[in-house]
Amino acid sequence: MISPALLTDLYELTMAEAYLRAGETGTAGFSLFIRRLPPERAYLVAAGLDAALDYLEDLHFTADDITFLRGTGLFSAAALNHLAALRFTGEARAVPEGRIVFGEEPLIEITAPLIEAQIVETLLINTLHLHTLLASKAARVVEAARGRAVVDFGLRRAHGIDAGMAAARAAYLTGCAATSNVAAGRHFGIPITGTMAHSFVTSFPSELEAFRAYAATYPDATTLLIDTYDTVQGARHAATVGQELAARGHRLRAVRIDSGEVGALSREVRAVLDAAGLPGVQIAVSGGLDEHHIAALLAAGAPIDSFGVGTRMDASEDAPTLEAAYKLVEYEGRPVFKRSRGKASLPGRKQVWRRYDADGRMAGDVITLADEGPPAPDAEPLLVPVMAGGRRLTPPEPLAAIRARCLAERTRLPDVLRTLDTGASPYPVAISDQLSVLSA
Image 1 (cartoon, rainbow, N blue to C red):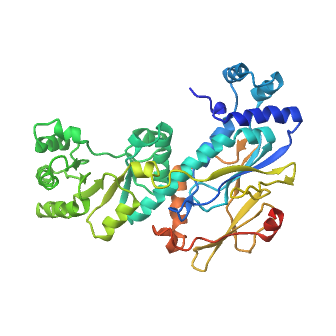
Image 2: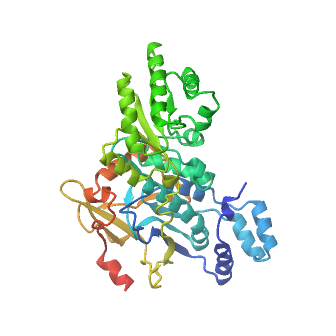
């Protein structure tokens, strides 16, 4: 088993050695943020906080970790003793999962003894980056589906097990109806669903026999994959099975198309099912879909009821990374910042305040210093206290509550930001006068 404490870049630990030797062990403030949105994104969905807080609460170096580090020859006995006793004892303020965020806005701010706050950099970025990346992509897919069900199909091509689990959680958090990932269903309580593979169909002497066998096993929960040979003929075979099920008091749930010109095929399949007296049988499609394909299919009037979306959502294919950064912003009460061109950071611990218009839509954000207070009487703070003394301030939120928050948040976005047109006017994020002066 990989030790979470060692999931850090080496320089975090060598800096810890140097900090100790220099006596730099005061209180530090770090801010984790996304520098700027990718061209393909109009907003981001904050996610991953629960996993990040789990990591902070459990941070410790095992005896085996210390033995390994001793063997590198890079660390003194004093540093190894310090690491052996290290626990995260600091504070954290963060944007709750499911909320909408934009570039430069902190996702989390850590205040802790310098070495503690420094060592957690790598895994905090890794966790919040991945979850936020995947949730932001999944939100676009859900928006494109315009209320039709989206199912996460992406585990098999996700970038490893952890990413597959994170993708299933992020997809459900943002509004997907279910996942094919059974482990995610058990671990997160996400509804699980599935159909069949082409191998099931080809293992039988005929398509019709395969469909009958599956329907006999799940007479009220069958979705038949109809494109193994000829999609329209597959629809006719599915209609036969659907009529047989209905005669026995059961019903065929759906058919799935996984290849070909799914828009045109869905119309032909709908006609076959309706002619067979099966208007309630739904049509699901899958196979290389993303938000743009879904939007185009629905704009063309394709009679599709649900979408199975895999690789392009679970790998965030069009924008596979975000410019996540974790920067020291305060040390021993002194604001600090980085001036590097293109990678400058804002000094001091901060707050993000959100304003709404008369219709309750998001109207603009202002990033201020943490102790400035609201820029307007009705402005809402995004960063809330989540940890003190190295412990959570509240129990972990149920995923259903985070999902409800995310769905409600997106209804408060300006309409232009809920479209797929990322060339639209960007959401306004301002810097307070006081923070601007401090950054000069």
